[in-house]
Amino acid sequence: MTEEAKITSTKSISRIWIIPILVVVVGGWMVYQQWKNQGPLITIELQSATGIEVNKTPIKVRDLDVGQVKKITLKPDLDGVLVTARIDANASHLLTDKSDFWVVAPRISFSEVSGLNTLLSGSYIAMAANDSGKEQLNFIALERPPVTPAGTPGLHVILQSDDEFAYKPGDPIIYKGFKVGEFEDAVFNIEERVVYYDAFIEAPYHKLITENTRFWDVSGVKLKLESSGVKMETGSLETLLANGITFGVPEGVQIGERVVENASFTIYGDVTTASNARYKLAAEYVLLVDESVRGLTVGAPVEYRGIEIGNVMAINSFPAVEGNILERDYPIPVIINIYPGKVRQPDTEEGLNAIKQTMRNWLRKDLRATLRMGNVLTGGLFVDLQHVSKPDDSNEIAMLNGYEVIPTVSNEFTQITQKADAILDKINQLPLGDMVSNVLLAVEDMKLAAQSVETASDDFDVLIENVDTELLNTNLNQVLLSLDSLLKNYSEGGLSQSEIKETVDTMQDTMRNLQPLLLKLNQSPNSLIFTDSNSSGIEPKAKN
Image (cartoon, rainbow, N blue to C red; front, side):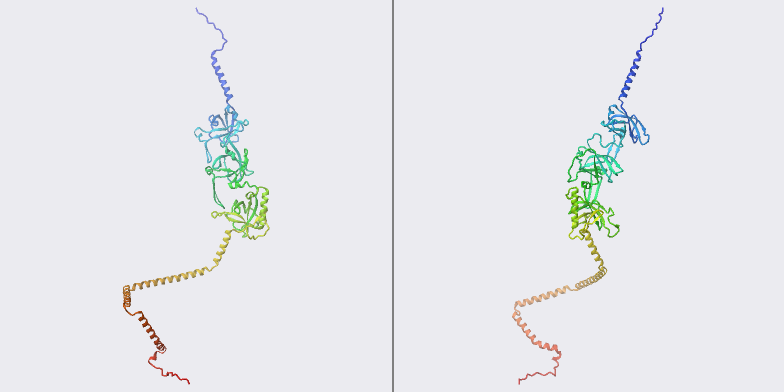
């Protein structure tokens, strides 16, 4: 007997659905948590997408991943790309208007070598975080990494220059051989034609920057041929390869108060220009030079009694004199200035007026200007102000285009040159042609005389060779023997000295007696043979 099954309906839910429900709940909770913690999406504008990959390129802050690139699209104007990235929620507070982004890639230049670690790991987007600004989600990436990391202690300054030299971000700032800062950015102002630089001085060197600090260029090696000689300037090894500047307080100037953030300074060409920049006022004068100004340069010193009191400002830079430079008597205008601060006067209007009044008094008396050579090797000239003993000019001060004129006198070199020219002119007037001809004739006569002397010498040599030296020696020996025998005879009892004297006296008497005869023979040699018939003896007569 079989029993019938009883089918009854149930209203309970099967336990098998518990697992899918749990999966859905856990998945929903995870999605919620992911959505809640995923952080905001941001857009970063880049020049190109080189090295950037979707879902792979990270965004880092101090080498810590805080996001990832999710999308890359072109800009509507096609001048760049837009990178969409997801930032972690725990880093969303760093997305402010003071935060910066840039692409880290290998970079090699004269001033830096960076990003070499990305050769293996690949490029990434770095973020300089700053949570003190306003929230921002759209950013424009920097073209290169910032020179100074965010939060670095130090001082930002603004430097300006209208000179030819230029600097780029990363160029060094040197102080006594040490690198103490760098250029961060450069902007050229077209309206002012001036380049403005953002620079950063690291701590603790930023304490050296005061209101009296001056900056000047030390790029490369500078070789200057000045009136004082050859001068070479260089900074450090870094400035030999790239441009750079240094700074300092001019000698004799107080250090001054420390400056605030973003203080403005000017970059000068060299230390001399930077030092002279402290002088705000200067008295300007003009020289009218009649001689050559070769060797005189802008910036050449103006000296009084060997002390530099000013500089040359311009040479023939304005049409101050009528005519043109090709005219023989055209004077070349040279503008100079004299600083009150260099003659121990205050750098004020009172000091400037005192300098002008002193110069007027001296110009009316005997003050004159001379171009002197400062160095023989370089030929550099400088302006020397001196008092002359007998000035030829009048006591009135000449004016030219608003400048007082300082009369000039020739320097010693010019005077020596003029005397040398006069001597050469006199030499040129001498009959040098006739003199040379006479000298040539005299040389020919001397040559003939020399030949005659040489011939006589040869004849004498022949005569000497023909002399019988042996016979001559024999005769000399016989003479010596005879003399010796005579002396022996005298010593052995020959004629005594008295006998010899008597003999000599007798001979003298005989010669006196013979003198009338000899005189007669001299007058009439035939008187010994023929007698004179006309002659008669003279008989003496008695006195009547």
